[in-house]
Image 1 (tube, rainbow over the protein chains, first blue to last red):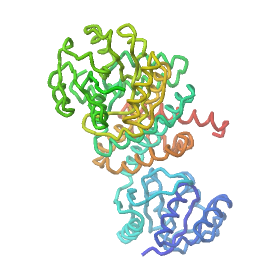
Image 2 (cartoon, helix red, strand yellow; image 1 turned 180 degrees about the horizontal axis):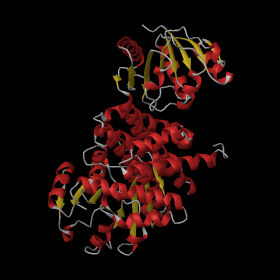
Image 3 (cartoon, rainbow over the protein chains, first blue to last red; image 1 turned 180 degrees about the vertical axis):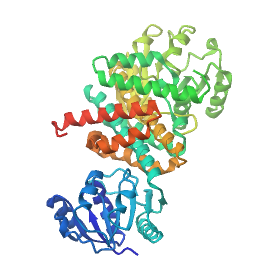
Image 4 (cartoon, rainbow over the protein chains, first blue to last red; image 1 turned 90 degrees about the horizontal axis):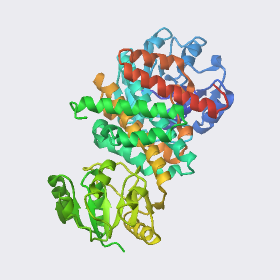
Length: 263
Length: 263
């Protein structure tokens, strides 16, 4: 069983993951971050030691859990000796094979969620996608995952990459469309609060319905009158106008296809 | 006070609005729909009469509430005499002035939400945007709105149009991105359920944070390694690839601007 963890990273994911593990009885023994201030801040929340010096990283704990930017993972692993350590990264798009050159015991522990430093989250339902190059490692990561979530799933590197891609569409891009809606309102002096019940319900709908079934609005109806009004409103905002046309067209095409040319 | 309503329409919005009003003690006296079956179905839920013949529409009730497609509003009003009636439509993008040629008592009653026939909603927090051409009419619509929601707001036609546009971005387009995420997963045999905690949290985040502050993901970090991996995954899916590039670029530009060229 994993009892002590060296946590590599002090960003959004490292913070929330560290807090969740610690709350569920898994000791974080040390936090490493490139910047001493971040390392120290998170360590004080987790009540553990910290360092910003790679050579001081404690490689003797039961797991080195790496939660830093994709490009920084290899840079760091090139500077420390983890041959005898169990190491796992937390990235959606980094294949496990990137770790095998550094240690013969490695794996992946990827929580599929959007994290902010300031928002503490219930991990309970967050899918934790695990992968390991030994059965023993897989079992250890599974046990660890089950400490924080009831939703632990073995997912290979290829599928995890696709999962990450789908998350970009359904979360990062979605949030950008909240932002674009916000922008339209702000220009009119209208409050973003007006959109909140709509945003909530749009998300709640797809908990029960397939998103294709849940689609509403002018594009799926091919309501040219409204679409043209909206394009006219965006006359002097080239980028928004382009995005509006492009996404409307994509909605229209999707549903035209699904509904056997009903449009 | 409005005591009886003739409900024009039997689609998603008419159904949910009819149910909400009726549940809150406002009598729907008649439902009109172009198709008899829809009219009859909704009327049976609301326990009232129905018709599919324009000349049989009861124009004597306290309010004719028009919840049909934008283009159909004028077509219908051309066929009936509502000169003596109080009429209000429920559309985001139709100016109130479109009604003044048919009656001297008119207004707008626009609930800002996405409706499906099958999902009954709590109206409590839904913003109801009202407008009327007389003070008396405005007061009547306000009273009516307060029967179903605590969030009734006077909004003129111009601002309502912008509100509708922002709703297209933050709801219709958002739902399409859920669908695109769903598509990526379906191709891999992965379950859409995996994305649900992420979708919930992405929406929950902007209840507290400004969407620009809530943005995460490869595009805002300008993580070219991941972006290029994702574009490669979409190699044979031209449309998805184009959308991916386009939205990523828009995120990048937005935040580059906001952060004074930190990228």
